[in-house]
Length: 498
Image (cartoon, rainbow, N blue to C red; front, side, top):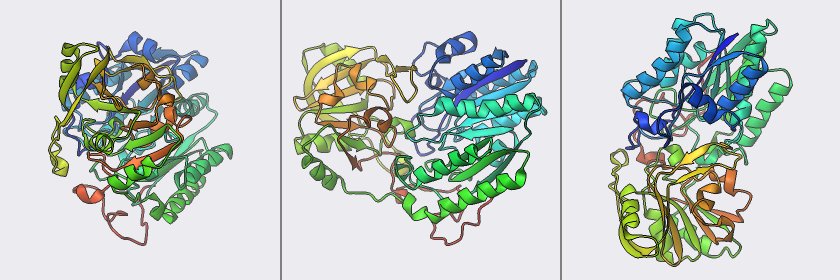
């Protein structure tokens, strides 16, 4: 039995000015992991691709792994990069296989395509019309008809912060092998709901999404092959952006449809709870000052790498410095030029920088605002570390050359490559003990909770500046299907899908 496994993941923020070329998918590696290199890089990691690998090896299948490509969210993918990665997968499928398993995101947009994932699947299906295809998708997938029509089994993450990558890979792979043995006949139903939930209200540690994902797990325990509620990614101005649900059963379409209808109705009934209410930054920091037990997480949630932010917006950091907060670690400001200046100054020496603010954000009408700051260069290193987990457990992370600037009150991590702070190792790798800090400024929305949740004594959400804004009034939506809540005040879901 020959199976083709591949990873091709990108969550595209169509409002982001950050370039998405082929090198970004290498995530700091010397080259994009392909073939045996991809296998070695992802075997025994907490990823969906590793879930595919382990399930296939238990089935004694011959594994073909053409590519493992995963870029931090950013602007639309350059078309040449997309074509290269897609071709690598299609070429191996063309050589013949018994099954295909894809670790996709579900919200990829390219320079020429509004639904990159659907095109990947359609091209593969044209080559192999009868081969079963299993797909693992992110919870923030903007699921389209092309994705559904060209897959056999789809399973989505059920946790946010995402800590079930591996389990999702297994959930997508097992029904495929069962189908090959003739034990099941996967049948899918899909529903879209006209909702654009705010990302800051999508975490599964709280309602409404906690109950929705719990219901998906109950459906699987009751016999569904896979049940998924996709909250969608609202920072992609494409037709299919938004919430959807998908259920796979063993040949029982009416049951799959009934389960989808139930999930869709549950989500719609709680639509107001998916709206995030923004607190003024001054009020947030005033509240943080009253919190005596640390570490207190200060979330710079408008500007995070895992939603396509530039990571060089300085609004929240500036406010922290002006407020005189003490014993603070800030992760991170993306500014390769500042890192180079710190390297040139040398460890132990004082340096004055125009930090961050190098990238303009025309989609939200903002120019970069560098922050003048003086401090001592505390540390310089290559920026490579391995995630401890539970998010991306065992995966190597690459921040590029990294430096720490100590202002006396705030230690600022300055990086050369984007990195979401989803693991405590992003700070411990630069010699900072996060548990010893009173405040942790993290450029994150929800993913911080995977690594820092167990040590955080409090959290304050700080509305700053950036293309990950929760203020939809600052974003111009031209393509998303309308009407959609909360852009439009509608009283009936009138969803689409099968």
